[in-house]
Image (cartoon, rainbow, N blue to C red; front, side):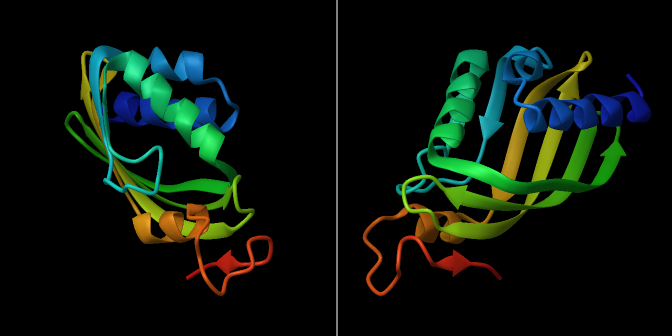
Length: 147
């Protein structure tokens, strides 16, 4: 596939995510795809996931932990089989009601028209503060964590 087709594949994937169509989103991934994200003991959806079944678990854990208030892909940069996307998101932790902003970068490596590897970079500290229930001095329902 060419650069434009690769960008379109990734853009379409974001549309599927935003509409909640995770089943069709997963069809854009190879069976042995890698999903790599930052590690955090306080963020249930952090870490690495291998294969479609584990990637589906990522989306289950993400949805159980946080809800998107805003999720905006901004810039799509492609070269060869690589597509890099920058964006911004605002999430709300379901267990605390706290919201936080998280700029992010996603790096997709494509093979034969599907995603072979996904690497995600995002603000783990903001997610940890929003999700962690033992936060002295923070009112669970009122705290807004924005930068």
